[in-house]
Image 1 (cartoon, rainbow over the protein chains, first blue to last red):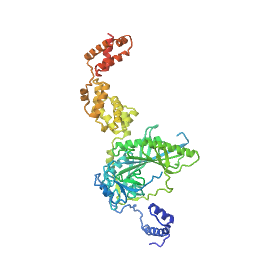
Image 2 (cartoon, rainbow over the protein chains, first blue to last red):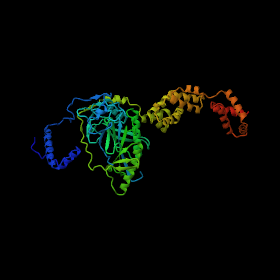
Image 3 (spheres, each protein chain N blue to C red):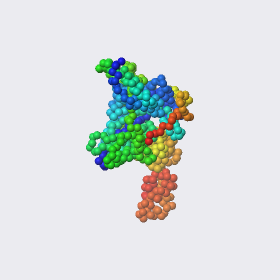
Image 4 (cartoon, rainbow over the protein chains, first blue to last red):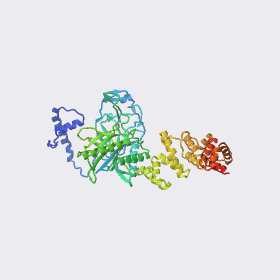
Length: 105
Length: 478
């Protein structure tokens, strides 16, 4: 791992933003800890930049030779309603039930 | 707009592709099933499940893109669009970010002065979200995930439209074209075609774009036009008062005919797109593209030009006929058995479309056949039945599907064109109506129509009115 720990200066705002995007509630005294850890992760991943990728096409998948995996438009089996709802924290009749989502208007 | 501003509009249209099953799993896409009964581990986003692309959805998407004159991309991949909302069980939507299925198409508008091409930036495939119900319970929202995973094609236009009515026409032609392909119902009221609109104003002559407003919650073509008209005026007023348009998303409130700010958070959406690792890339071979291209039907604009050229129709009539493919096909099928273009056109424009409206159905829902209408027209032309009787025959035929000749026979609608028989009736009518007969003889020529009416009554409407008139006037001049 590189020694240059300050290469990415993740700010407290970045940590709080990432937490909000992930719907994670972070106590303010934890912010510093996560800031440091996220920074470490980026520095670690940055080692990949040492590889010479000149002339290599961007790779989005590891299975580089696999292409065009399709299924035919034929109906398969769906779950019965009670199974579909089996893991739901809350349900009502045939529906999943969640805290009221108010449209922002 | 007669002001110093120019309106700039772009539309994002989502079309549900009418496959039997969902885009990444084998669940049915049939509308109207009990809630949460057309779901499986894949579309519920259960851990360990894997999506597999529906081949038909892929081909339908290519078909639409080709009809919109897009360039189909050689390599196509899917990406995850991350956001949290209860109608999205995986917390990401599988969509296409930087390698969509197609770029660079166009829709040609024809209603203005000459043709105007509206550019299509791109078209990409994605999965639909579930349906939220907010009105079932005061404290909760209910979720039905049957719609989750229905294949969608999103078609993004360039900001090329310059008025709400151009946006309306663009949508109309887009819908018409896609319906010709038989790959979507394109019903805005039922949600199989959805549209968000972007609108901004700029000073005429300016190249830079003004701050744009995105309008959502548009549930009909009319709503699109009305919302854009409202928003155009609102932005103009703001600018005239020296204010600025705030870049934001607004909702169309149909009941009050206004757009309302969504008052969303200041920060922009951050979807953190990244390649969907569960779907390998797709390569679209030239031969596949060419095969699908060869399967494209003649599209409305080409059909319209051909109708004008081949049948001598005017632009309005041609447009009316091609507006729905079944009607256009029906028109040509009737012409195969009856070459009187004018009559066929008038019958379709008049009676046939009237019945379609009354039955609120498409042609395929009625039992009307091309040879049925052809024979009605032929019988009318030869004088076998009157125009009035012809309408009655059509009305019966399109519901019962019986042969028009049978209907004529059974209902006794055949016109009496037998001169001897009409001669006798005419003589009786003249005898029974001496006053009208006298009026006619003394020069009141319109007394004749009364007498013709009497002949029609005597024959229960079966007399050939033209012939009856001839016989009557001949007798009265004797």
